[in-house]
Length: 288
Image (cartoon, rainbow, N blue to C red; front, side, top):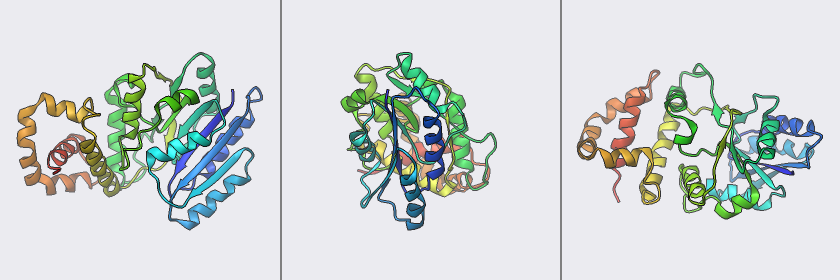
């Protein structure tokens, strides 16, 4: 099998990630070949772009710069279009390899008959930065709340047969932040494909500060609002459907308590229950 490792990035130095992946691929003599392709999607940081140029010096590795940002869905589709492998291993550029058998475990699953493999992601057991507590607490709550098959699909690190990907692809109408991976998972399910989950996580090496994570959350809520007909099974929309009274009064309570909620969420000990209410109230206050 030939493997294409595909990494979209935006203003992030991922040379170390690519180097670690390249060493693991070189160490697998039974491989049918591999390539690692990184595309910078319209990033503005020239210093980081120069650092990533070193990727081109590694065997079987390519770094490409897009002049314009085309978005999270379109960049993944473009990576797939230029890939030569029969298997596509997508991952985010802020990941970190923490297992010596990371590539080997994905290849093993493929050879055992899987069509789509998701290895998951993991984080520090303790918050590494007091300004990033909201994302850290959210991720840990997410990891312990449900099993893999009950969660929305996440594209942080997954492998798929190329011919299957070309049947589904990422929906490029998702041109804002977030939820394109949830839609991708729904589309896979509707096509009848099963996802194999394995314990082979990539470490999330770049938690955003609380202010940035809250901004991204708000942007993702606008994405959900614009695509709610397709994402009706999302946790938030399901809650609204089953709790109409709470949904009726939540917008007013949100407006009254917004300043308090923001202070908590941007502080050192954000409360995830309050975060969930913030998302509910913010979403219900979005105007057409």
